[in-house]
Amino acid sequence: MVVKISCEEVWREISNYLEDETSAELRARMQEHFKGCTHCMAVLEGTRNLVRLVGAAGAFKLPAGLSDRLYRKLNRKLGKGRQSRNKE
Image (cartoon, rainbow, N blue to C red; front, top):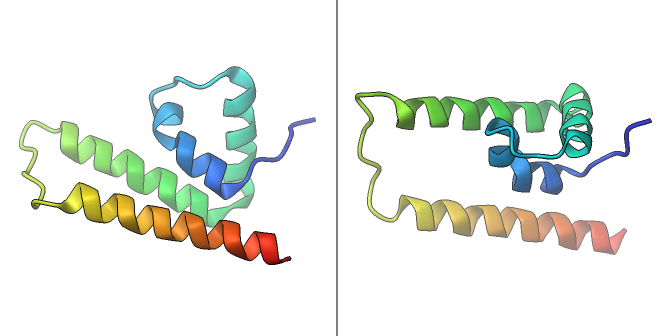
């Protein structure tokens, strides 16, 4: 039996998953989660595509401040998810 994992946990570990730097147990949990969560599967594929683009020979320069904006948006999203779960 595989113990379920939340979307937030999956998002925190996505890069480790792609780099094969997770434990076998966590990897199995994530793979099971991807089977039933289209949103996380889309995040996985998007992250995988982004890694390919950045690693490509003709990589492009990202706009200034993009990383900061991305982190702020992720933190807002993750914070909202935690708050709505705490209300239930």
